[in-house]
Every structure is written in C-alpha cells, then in structure tokens.
Amino acid sequence: MSATTATPVTADFWFDPLCPWAWMTSRWMLEVEQQRPVQVHWHVMSLAVLNADKDVPEQYRAFLTEAWGPVRVCIAAAQAHGDKVLGDLYTALGTRFHNQAEPRTKETIAAALADAGLPVELAEAADSTEYDEALRASHKEGIDLVGEDVGTPVIAVPGADGERVAFFGPVVTPTPRGEAAARLWDGTLLVASTPGFYEIKRTRTAGPSFE
Image (cartoon, rainbow, N blue to C red; front, side, top):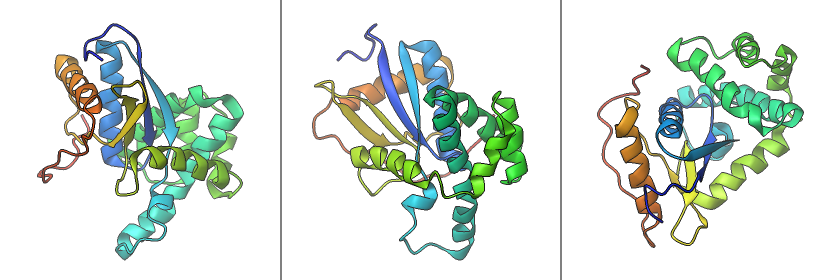
C-alpha cells in the first residue's frame, strides 16, 4: 500500500478519556483526517481494566478508580446513540479533563455530555457496572490486536495484506499539525506494511503539551 494512496483508509483508535497521551494522539488523528483520505473509528479501552491485576503505585491506583466513570459513560452513550457519538464525546471529555484541567467528576462528565449534544442523564452510568461487560469487550478487541504489553492509545491501520495491524501510539507531543501530521501518518502506514515490524521507542523527555 502506498502511504499517499487516494483510497480511503480506516484507522481504528482505542482510547481512555483520562489518558493524556491518548488525547495528544487523538488530536493528531483529527488533523490527519484533514490532510489524508482517512476516517477514524473510535473505540473505548480502559486503563482500569488494563491495570487491574498489576502492581501499581497507590496514587495511580486512586487514578484508576476514577477512570471507571468516563469509560462507562462512553459505552452507555454508544449503546444508546450509536458508535458515531464517541468522537464528539471524547473531544468534549478530553477538552475538559486535559485542556481545561477540570476535576474527573460526574459533574464534569455531565457537562461534557451536554457539550456533545447528548443527554446529561448518561452521566449516571459512571457509577454503574451495567456497562462493564461491553466495556471489557471493546477493550479486549483492541488488546487482542496489539498484545498485552501496551497502554493507551491503541491504533489499528491496514497492513500490507489489508488486515489490521495495531500499535501502541504513536506517543507524541505537541500534536503535529498540517503536513507534519500527514508525514507521521504516512510513516505509520509504512511501518504497518512492513512484515515483522514491532517497535520504535525512545525515552520521553517532555510531558504532554495541550495546545
């Protein structure tokens, strides 16, 4: 597959609304949609599910407890109104959580639902286990593609044979814009089309920059 092909490409993107690095990557994907023939399909994964059986610091464990609410609400919204609402809801949640540094509370979730044009009553799903089975299924779909030793985000793109190839990342800050975003996307397709390619990585020396 040519990186600059005019054939529309589907990118599957798994996110947890509380992950700042997933937020950075998601803003890049929105930029890519403006530069290349790409359509993003949004899916929910869960940091709480991912780390449930891991030995993590107590402070992070408290964060994971808070992480259940937003993903449950995303699943509830998708069940009630279709997966198409996930992109706008994610944008609303991420803007409040990351750009505006609002508290990770049910009140903030309700405000984000209103921003996305969705019923604020869906915020009640934050405290319900009713949606956990569907949440775990959505999470599992992404993890089954990419493997266990990852975090958020997970992105899946077509490989050389057209089958989905999934990666953790790309992890980037600040969000690339314009042609820089397009070049990173072209590179993503290139490595996905290389059989046996698994990883490029270096130490992070900067935190996420919410521009």
